[in-house]
Image 1 (cartoon, rainbow, N blue to C red):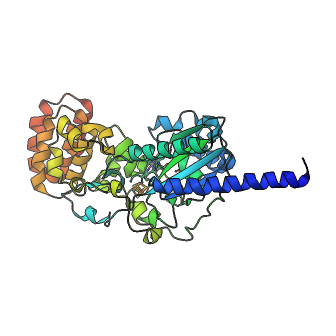
Image 2 (cartoon, rainbow, N blue to C red):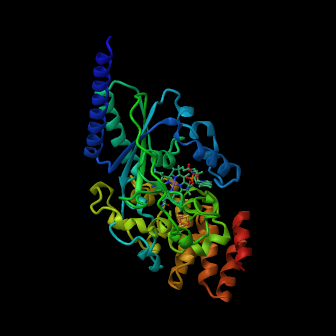
Length: 387
Ligand code: B12
Ligand code: SF4
């Protein structure tokens, strides 16, 4: 083959690849993704190192699944040796109202923005699978799709693919969508041209660090998950440690404070995808009503919602912490009723709520009656601690 023939062949390969990229971008947008970028597997080495330091420091708390098999997470090739390109995708879930306003309504529950609608895992997985199918049909290859639950470092990969940068709150910040992006990934055996990594645009801002109610950031870009309200209300299975209970306020599932404080949100585009809309009944539900949910009613209210995965007992634990923080003595009757709940987790949180809401004398009367019939050690400890 002559040199000019080789050049012609290479030019046509380049043209095909740039056409494939343009078509991939168009297809991703048609399927409801708001941004897309591509990187290679070997681009997150330093993030992988930071991940190992994070695990060694114990910052993951009880999330053993996060610490398991780190070699799979710190490099995409550890999860799938054939991967040659990583396609990162984002879906904007910017709220249609101020997510911090609810924090002032102390008898209402604050559910974090991402959990007020249908479960994003299901929605994004469907879109990822559709895009992956299209890719395989267009350019024969093998693919795997991931959203959230697999051993994939989605934020560093998204930064490497130019979707945004990991801000001081550790989440990905986008110039277009601020802090409100869900992430998903497609690993492929195709070798696609990579985008340039995005650079850090946080500058001297520290709004997300300063707003955190539980001081969960030991340093910028580092989170101690054990102090984060998202971890405490969602991942943590036991009683919520005493030191964080008041700071949690009325946040009963997740927390949005650091995301909402980010000044880049003001550049976020209007008009989010309709299917990510909040359900009206989950925008500001009453604490009293939530405290009356039994298992069946809990499952019915949170059908298709991510909230369902923590189960009724952990959910009620969170609601009772919020009741204790409500300052509304009328809610004491709800906590009192839950002293007889079948779950020690719920009974223990009810004790704390009563300790916050009842006058000392009244509390002691309730205590002496309830302590007699309480056999669980952890709940008895709550009674002692609340006295
Ligand atoms: C575990 C996890 C959590 C944990 C731990 C959070 C965390 N920051 O890691 C908990 C339960 C607390 C959590 C909470 C939330 N999560 Co979460 N979570 C994850 C998950 C499954 C893994 C993240 C991970 O690998 N963490 C491990 C640590 C090591 O990672 P890291 O914090 O990013 O660590 C970096 C920094 O610490 C930094 N670093 C460490 N040391 C040093 C030192 C220096 C010098 C420097 C410069 C940097 C540095 O480098 C590390 C590696 O990049 C991802 C999905 C996925 N598979 O990626 C979703 C994910 C991160 N979560 C998400 C969301 C939406 C949330 C919440 C907003 C939910 C809510 N409203 O309550 C909160 C936000 C809290 C916060 N400020 O991070 C989204 C974030 C989207 C985005 N735009 O970034 C993800 C990507 C899920 C998704 N598919 O969309 N989450
Ligand atoms: S989500 Fe809330 S508690 Fe967690 S780090 Fe951000 S501001 Fe702090």
